Amino acid sequence: MSGPHEQMEHAEHAEHASHGGNKKIALLISVLALFLAFSETLGKSAQTAAITDNVAANDLWAFYQAKHIRGTILRTGAEQMQIEADRATDPATKARLAKTAKDWVETAKRYDDDPKGGEGRKQLMAKAQAAEHKRDVDMARYHNYEFASAAFQIGIVLASAEVITGMVILGWLSGALGIAGLGLTSLGLWAPHALDFLMHASGGH
Image (cartoon, rainbow, N blue to C red):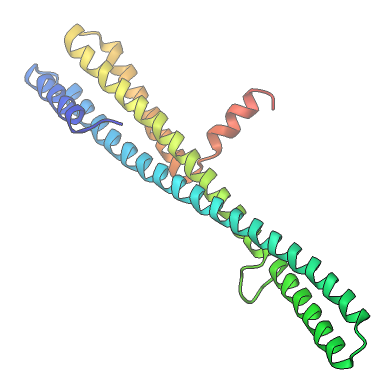
């Protein structure tokens, strides 16, 4: 992504074109630089969101695994406790051991499915998958914005080259790249997976 130095260069290119009498090219460079700033800001935001969502998904899967381990330990302990209860001859001891075994089984079930608390394995899996989906969407947006930024940057270079060479075709190519950049930015905002779909479709997958 471009920094303040590159932004100043874009402004200088536009000013140079304006002084040279190329008002339209100066305007084109300024517009492309503006769109470039937007696409890079959106790209940075999408990249940060994707990183955050990835961390959240990893944390949720780790919690999911911890619940699975705890549930397995409790079920194993409950089975052993029930065996001890069956062997016990004292009614009070038998009842106490059986109750403990039952409580552990119920706790293990709650580790698997806890609609009220929202922290059962079933709920954690749903949350982790949702976080992964959001991460994938953010990454798709980021890639669209990166492609858009590249289109705007190349467009600025071509427009600047027209000022030097006087080749009108470079200005047209610059404008076309600006339109392409706008299209990619729009895809990032409203249809982030459209580009991936088109690429897969063209590849025959």
